[in-house]
Amino acid sequence: MATIEDSPTFFSAATPAAFEIGSLPATEIPVDPLENDSTAPPKPVIITSPTVAGTYPVVLFFHGFYLRNYFYSDVLNHVASHGYILVAPQLCKLLPPGGQVEVDDAGSVINWASENLKAHLPTSVKANGKYTSLVGHSRGGKTAFAVALGHAATLDPSITFSALIGIDPVAGTNKYLRTDPHILTYKPESFELDIPVAVVGTGLGPKWNNVMPPCAPTDLNHEEFYKECKATKAHFVAADYGHMDMLDDDLPGFVGFMAGCMCKNGQRKKSEMRSFVGGIVVVFLKYSLLGEKSEIRLIVKDPSVSPARIDPSPELEEASGIFV
Image 1 (tube, one colour):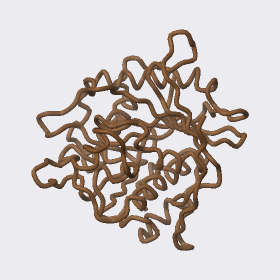
Image 2 (cartoon, rainbow, N blue to C red; image 1 turned 180 degrees about the vertical axis):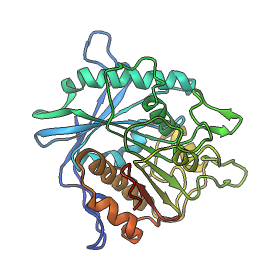
Image 3 (cartoon, rainbow, N blue to C red; image 1 turned 90 degrees about the horizontal axis):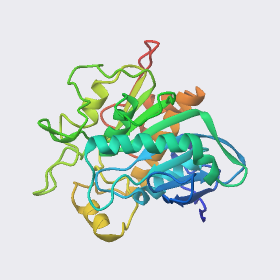
């Protein structure tokens, strides 16, 4: 069990605490499928958990197309340091599976987490079964939406979710070549979801990278996902960053090399993007699960408090009809 101690990140006094590393030390716990272990997961997972005794909400995190779950270590540790247990499955091996297979595998991991996550947590750390949220990046963002919309045939129907966050979600390479299941309808507010939803986008995701096509193409990216959500919903776009800029630095192996060069990347520090993404996830979870509204409303009213420039203006539309 490898422990990762949190190092402080400093912003201005007005910056919401969610953009900074939290007060809880976190640990990463890799767990692999084992035939002789009834508590083992159906897919390899990395659990990122606070080490301080307590009961914490659970967040399922789904990686992007062809990526590795350990590419997100910094962001996952950021969120865990604020009091969340993250479960990040590895849903592909050498080649990505079909879209429906990936969604069904995600459902199987969620079932496992509801029953057996407790067997792999640090001493005196417990999962709060009342709160389970879905977060995903890129194709994993689309997977999170598909699960929430009921497309995982494997999912135990008794399991419910408290919040959904898509980080630059992508539904395919173009409007006519989408991944299964086809969840985008191209009709406003058509997603049948009764939980709060946040969509995070990137300004450079829809841009070509020299001869490489966009990693988050128009009509399949955060803009369309947000349009199809109903309130309560929030939208934040990091204008100066690309689709892969939330990943860790110095990613290993061929997949890490490709992740660093396929998409158009921003010129600013990736650490700022990771603080932004981790902070938005924390802020939205606090808002959705705990009813803490001050930080998210501050960001919407004064986007300059964010470590990444937000443009267009952030939005928070509440089911009560309040548009912040």
